[in-house]
Amino acid sequence: MSEIKKIPVILDGDPGHDDAIAWVFAKANPVFDIKAVTSVAGNQTLSKTTYNAMRICTLLGIDAPIAKGRELPLLSP
Image 1 (tube, rainbow, N blue to C red):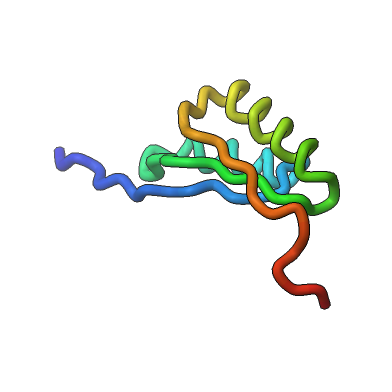
Image 2 (image 1 turned 180 degrees about the vertical axis):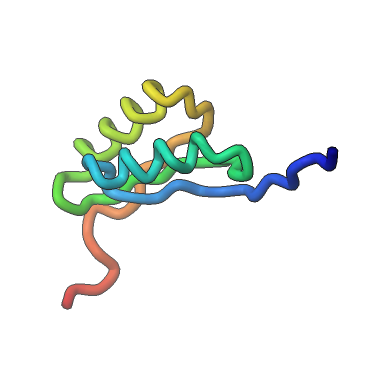
């Protein structure tokens, strides 16, 4: 049986419940090799989304660096 070639992945989001579910699927997929996690402000402040990212990673056993992103969007509609 051949070895699965892993795809390196960086998870990026404003982790609320929707991103948490997506990260569950990413962690469960044996093809993905999660290399890093970044959080940005979205529906919440950057502090809260970064805290959420740390909690989600801890719960899922994701052992990857977590970095804060931007507090504001690059572009506003």
